[in-house]
Image 1 (cartoon, rainbow, N blue to C red):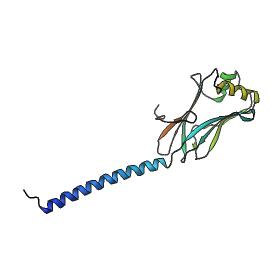
Image 2 (cartoon, one colour; image 1 turned 30 degrees about the vertical axis):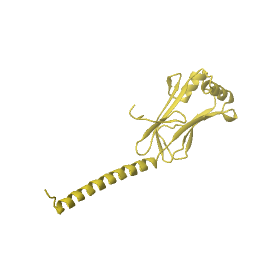
Image 3 (spheres, one colour; image 1 turned 120 degrees about the horizontal axis):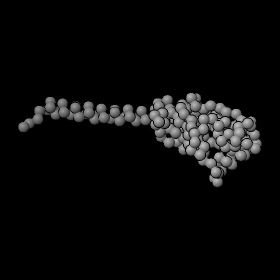
Image 4 (cartoon, rainbow, N blue to C red; image 1 turned 180 degrees about the vertical axis):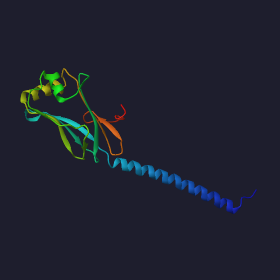
Length: 170
């Protein structure tokens, strides 16, 4: 059975069309990944205990805005609703000089840094530092921040480690 030249041309055109379709689909996927990467936020929280003061700062070190959805703080596996509650549980009082700043619900631009808490009282700052963050501390302290990109790709951070997460669905 002879294949007519018109049929060969038709099959060749279909093959080339299908190959082109797959190439375009692959290219579109690469471009989508590139777009998501071009707005990747990277949130870190770090503590500072310099000058006999204590602070916890949150910074966006990524290249895109970070939408902060949730901040959870735990002391010895127990949820803390505020810095005051944390200090009362830790020190028995929160009656000392400190300032708070809300991070939850904010959009942090690339390079933007916000101090969540800053304790100016020297004695309280030293006590908080030793009770929370020293390696032989009697307490466990956890601070997790759920944040998303403008494309709703979400992560959790527990300091300097970002974990890909579905933190909005938990």
